[in-house]
Image (cartoon, rainbow, N blue to C red; front, side, top):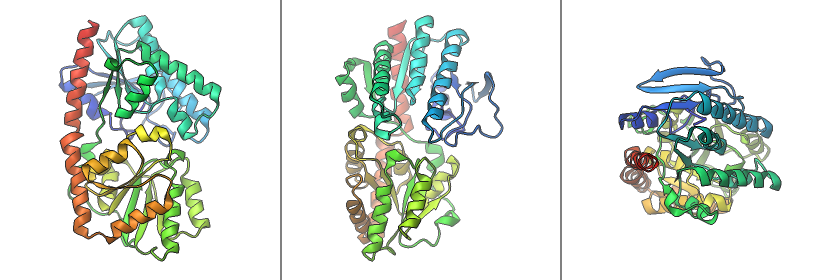
Length: 403
């Protein structure tokens, strides 16, 4: 996996330790931490290989080009450099392995593992969190049709050669069936969140979340083109124009390619019921979620996102706050099944504003019930304990079949 602790990931050290507790000798092959800022974290220095061990998990960091900017060339170099290092390490230096688990995104991680398999013959399981090349087109990272076709061919080549594919949503399964992947080769396991950092009852409210007007509507996470948060900003402007600007404050927590432009747009439009909070560490996010009255998920109105499960959904559910889901399809259906909030059409600023007014009209007890419902649904259906049981069972099965 290219991204790993201390980067903000949910399948990181805790996941690796759970696999080790199941009786596996685990080695994590990853990069030097630089996500999401694109700069190598303090205390790390890029070198060809760096080895360490933590709680019984061997961690091998390999060289990459650090980047996560709006410059697509930089991000492509980031992905390809890690993939090249991973291919070299897995082909020539890794210990004999019974199983390789490759976490995607980016898909270049899976391509490196499958390419190395041509020489080492170990079975490979790929965990698909983002569906390429669909994600590249939906987010605008790549729009060139020829380039997208090349990525599509590479992905299909990889799917044919892996032993099993883990999918982050049931909708991905339908897409891959259409691309010729056999159904018995796929298993959908909807992921969990970083429970240890988010499941805490007593928290101090961050100072910049105090004294805000009305309900605190918090969006926490990446602020990029895929999130289409200009629609959310427009919803805030609609409420302000209708005389409801005092009823709610939209809080944007995080960083991303669109953050500065969105903040500038808020100033230009004189939208006063929004604030932009600085990026915080993963350990601090839980305090912000617990301080909000409503937690917002929003993605572009794109067919791909109808079968996507945004990972922040599970974090929001653990936080026990009502959720405002601006995503069609599977994610919206999950919140409706959990009775954990309200769903609206994405990129519909008036529908979003209307949903905010509905939250405002609710009693505090009604909002609390929605949050409790979301939290209860998570622990009964989506927890790491339940998800890991599926992973360990699948790992054992693939090992037996490949022996």
